Image (cartoon, rainbow, N blue to C red; front, side, top):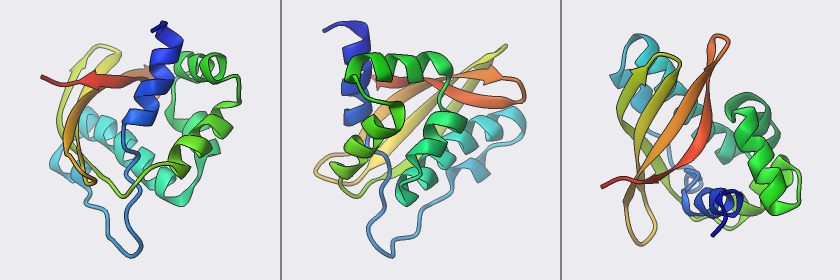
Length: 143
């Protein structure tokens, strides 16, 4: 599978933490401090924006430009529309950041997706963009 197509497939596979109606989300960012907390907060924001259907904010504020471009190229849609389609197909899930590793302007977040038929753990890659952390890769299945 070509790299850009793989990104959209990973995007679809990564549960976007669409909580069931009335279900409160757990905030795993509180378990971290400093820059690690900022990285974890980006994942929490992804969960929050997805739950609200704010795909435009996900594309503009949380995803790195390289990932936005790859999503657009692979899906032949805008980032916003590709995410709307993915979120519409998702079940109820919860994302929990388990580990954050930072090396310079890059970070890795190990994220557990809870819900549906099977829990899974994925690794998200993030990059520093000014003072913000942005998701540059929607991950690989963690070992």
